Every structure is written in C-alpha cells, then in structure tokens.
Amino acid sequence: METLQRLTRRQLETLEIIAAVERPGQGAALKSVASALRVRPPSALAHLTPLEALGLISRYRGKSRLTPRGKGTLLEYSRHHRVAEQLFAQVGFSPEETCRAAREIDLALGHGTVDRLCRSEGHPPTCPHGQPIVPCQGRHGGN
Image 1 (cartoon, rainbow, N blue to C red):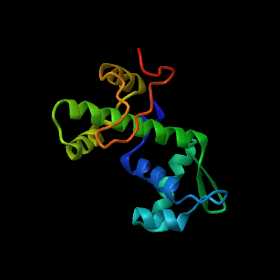
Image 2: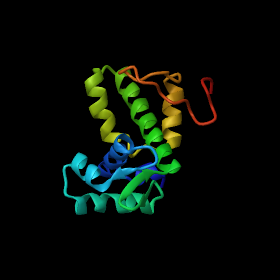
Image 3: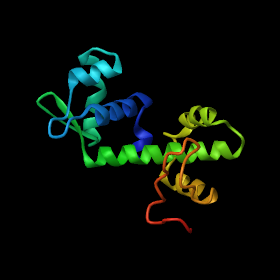
Image 4: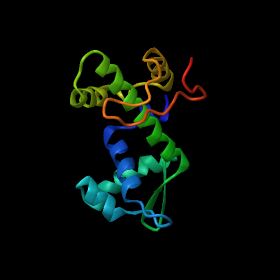
C-alpha cells in the first residue's frame, strides 16, 4: 500500500497544517498544530506520532518538521486530488462539487491509477480551480 493510501483524512490535514505553520529552521510547535487542529496538545501528539513513524515528519524539542518524504506526500496528494477534480469536471460537476467528490476518493487512489486517469484526460495542466497539476512521474505530457 502506498503511503498516501495509509493516511487518514485527519493525518493529511495534520501534514498540511505543519506545512502551513512550520517556520524555517524551527518547525511547527505542538501548541500551534493543536490549535490549528482545534484539539488539545496530547490529542495533536496522537496525530503526529504515526506521521513520524511513516517518516513524513521529524520531531525535535517539541517542534515538527516535514521530511522530504512528507513534502513529497503532500505534493502527491495535491496531484491525486486535482486529477480527480478534473475527472469530475469532465462529467459536468461544478468546481465546488468537483472538490467535494474528489475528497471522497483522492486518498484511496494509487499512483498508477492517477497516472492512467491523467493520461486519459490528456494531461490537463490545471484543475477546475486553476491550480497546476503536477505531470505524471517521468512523463511530461505525451504518454
């Protein structure tokens, strides 16, 4: 199973929060992560521990930092989500509906499936919201 498929929606949200509040060279304080998650620090720590075990974050002196693997996982997630949005847009969903529908499946899709969907959609450069879609691994445009 791919890393992205192992994550819960809440764990993904925790990664996104760390990316948003992490300060260069200092990381994200547990208290800041807890506040953004709207939970107490012990509950936030329960979300951080499995992310650390997966190698997506590192923790040092109460601060969490995304690892290169964590940053890559967030990039993969945005690609999965945006490709799924584009698929739903092709069948007539509004941009708001595409986002809701994509959230129902984006964590479950494997990389190979997303690559095939992307190819079948002609490698769209952006999602329905105008955000860029990262090209297929090792394939830019074309097949």
